[in-house]
Every structure is written in structure tokens, then in C-alpha cells.
Length: 517
Image 1 (tube, rainbow, N blue to C red):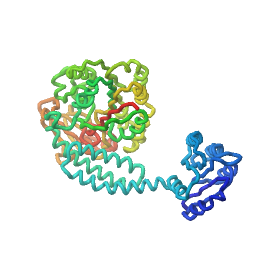
Image 2: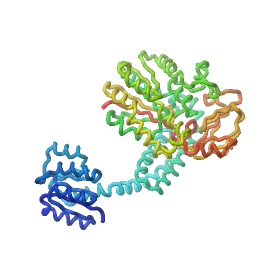
Image 3: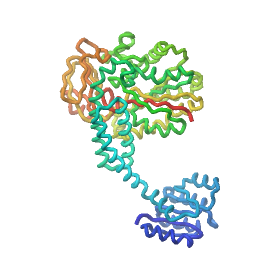
Image 4: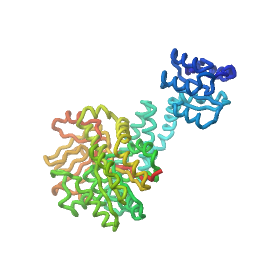
């Protein structure tokens, strides 16, 4: 049996051909002629679908619908009516009907409604799986080619699309196939990125992908020069897939003018990447220009306390005579304060806002078992961050910006990756503690593993703490552990989200331009 259906219509005798047609298709049909019988039947039996005539004598369709929802709120109800009056449609939709059909209906219309409601998920799942298997070959062929940076962005977007689509099907076999393909893509991307990195950071902007120091001058300042008001919103540690689950919520209020991406610099860590965005400089250039403000990894103190000053200098350098504000939101209380003082921001031509929730949440997963249980995988991480968005001060502020007709640019400083494979490394006491990159002297590691080393930091425009400093970056899903108490740290950090290294998830950062609806 395909499903059990209750069909209520005061002219049910005229619909016998339809009932017979559905019976032949494998559905069990119970028929009644008025709303009171519907209520009695629903109390006695569970139904997969209820077809409900809107215009029945006695208890009408809409009144019957309200009582059905109280008795069996999750049973899909299809309203069938002769009337095309708009207020009836609105009342029915407001009562959460599953479908709405106008008489006269034909058997195929009814069958389509049944299939959509009873078999929709399995049909969508089957079609999704079929479509991905067709796309699998195209993605694999692209990965093996000598791709440009834009081609890699396009491939990564395709992988995210299929990640989100296949997640809905819960086909474990196909999800495993997809994960293997994504791992392979990460492997080839890391080779591509590390092969070109030093060349890129020493090239002109025209001869490299957009990178962290280019974001303001290439993507933000042109709007200011056109006289537009701009809100630049940086969500720390936001991945491209997280943007894609944010997008439907934000599109209720905004049009997406462009969905671009840029490549984060190394290390893909806040101190380096975010300072590069606000200064328009690579880390070594920042350290040389502002020696009193730059703190090396082994020095005490906050490493991201001067972003507002860096942005001031960059605005002056670009000869932009605009008033601007800079705000950083780390706690719920700070979000509330910013929301309450929005009336001040609305008259400022350029507002830069940093939201730190995702980064703080990722670090909490490392430190707290409860957070680990909440986000055992990437799908759960997306769900949690979407829930944050829907109830955040960030969304509240976005709604207020909508009324200003301002440009909104949403981005991040880097992403994060779920780490799986431990990598042994040995360094002295001054070696940095980050799990995805290490800076220190006399670093000892397996050079055949998934590690990218920069032995001359100045070539990559990276500062160094001593003459023999080396940077080592974990690639793909690797993470560094010291040999001392090795097994403890391997188990502690496995499946946590980390950043600082090289992967599609950390490097390719969303750069979204919105305009109010």
C-alpha cells in the first residue's frame, strides 16, 4: 500500500473514478461526505493525507481544517475548492495546508499531490543521487586538470552544493563517495595552493587571485568612491558552506548582487589574515611598518587590537575622505549594545563590524565536551551556526541596515576544517601552539606527510622570531601533536574544527555583496 487517504466531499459519488484510479495506484481510500465525519475518522484512524472539500454543508472546509490541525497537526491536508477567491486561498495557506487544488480536478492532479506529499523525499533523494553521480565525473576530471584559481573556486562551490544536497538524502554509501571526492579535491587544491603561494604574495594584484590584503581596495572601497554607504561585516572563521545555509535567511531581506570569493593568506589564523584585511598589507609588511603594534606568536598580549588603526591608515592611503566606524562583537552583551546604538551608525558612510561567534564556538568545541556532542560533524556545525544567525544581533542589525539602502558586504578572514589525521612534530619551548601551523626554530617533522614548510619566511612575507625560524602548515585534514603524551592529544583534538593551515575550507573565503530588497 502506498498510503492511506481520507477524502471528504459532499459530492463524493461524482469522484468515484478518481477514487478508483488512486486505488489502482496502490492507495487505500476512505470517503466521507461532511466535516463532522472527517473529525470522527481522524480521531479513530491515522491518515497519510486528507483531501478536504472547502465548500461542504454544515461544518465547512476551513472550520474542519482547524479541528484536524488540533487533533493531528502533522497530517498533510489538501484543500479542494471551486472558489478562486483570494481570501479563501490566504485562509487555507495560513492554516498550513499542504496543497491547494481548484475544481474540476483530474486524476493526475490528485496523483501528483499524493506523490509529492508521500513520496516527495524519496523521489528527491533518488533524483539528487542520480544527478550527483552524473556530476561526479565532471568534478573529478576538473580536479586533475591544471586549473586556475577561479576554476578552484567554482569546483569548491560545486562541492558545497552537493554536500548540502546529499546531506538531505542521508544515503550513507553516496555520502562516503562524496567525502572521498572532497578529500581528493582538497589534496589537489593543497598542491596547487602551496606550489603558487610564494609567487602570489610577491606578484602584483593583477597576477594573482584576490588575497586577504586586497579585499578592501578591490571590493569595498570602490563602493565608497561611488558615494555609496557601506556596511562591511566580517564573521570570523565563517566557511563558504556556512554562508550557503545563511543565504536563505538573509535573502528574505536582501538581494545577492555577487557571490565572490578570495584566498586567505597563510597562516589562515586571525592574527595574520584579519590584520592583513584591515591593513591591506602582508604580515611581514605590517611588522616592518608597525613594529610596536605587531606581536609575534610567542609574545604576550592581544594580537588583534589594532584593526581600527590599520583601517584608518588604509583609508588615508586610498585618499578616501569618509567618516567610518569600527565595532567588534565578541559577546551577546556587545551585540545588544551595538544594536541599541545603531541610530549612530546609520548616518556614517562606512561601518566595519566584526562578529566573533563562529570562531569562539569552534574553539569551545575543542575545550568543552558538550559542544563536541552538539557538533559531531560539519552538518551539525552548519545547523548550529544557522540557529545562531536566526537569533543573533547580527540579523537584527541586518534588518535595520535594510532600510538605509546601503551596500552590505559580508565576508570572513578564514575558514576552518575538521581535523582527522595527527601529524608528529618536534620543536623547542618557543614553538607556537596552534594545531594547524607551527612557527619555531629547528622544527622536526616527517617531510613526506601532509605538511607545507616555509623555511625562508621573508619569501612568503611572513615575520620570523629568530634567524632560523620555519613555518610548518598542516594540509588537508592534518593536525600537529607533540610526541609527549601523543595519544592523549590525538584523541582530544580529533574531529575538532581548527584553522591556520591549508585546505579548501580554510583558504577559499566567501565575499558577498548585498543590496536591500
